[in-house]
Image 1 (cartoon, rainbow, N blue to C red):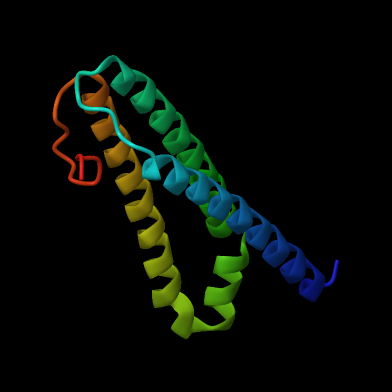
Image 2 (cartoon, rainbow, N blue to C red):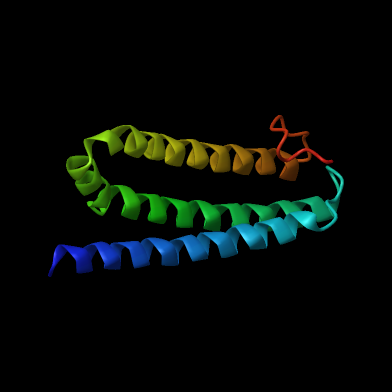
Length: 127
């Protein structure tokens, strides 16, 4: 298979996964726009469970996407062909790790909320 075709297929796959990520993030935003029950209310458990489900789905999509981007070979090829891109590739991989860490942190905060405790993470506190 010619290199150009392989690169095009890789890019199409990445863009497809990005559309899935955008849809998942949009669903999460829509969910978060709904009224949030008070900590300790019975509805808070259902709210927390639904939010956890949305976050786990987003985490799954991110891991799959990042793995494809990082392990698919294109980043390595880019670094080899364009050595100046090494720093950009390293920064992108670091950003992937930071995003996953933030999703896990918010998911943990949701679990505190479900237990009826005030989460320490400001991303989940009542606004």
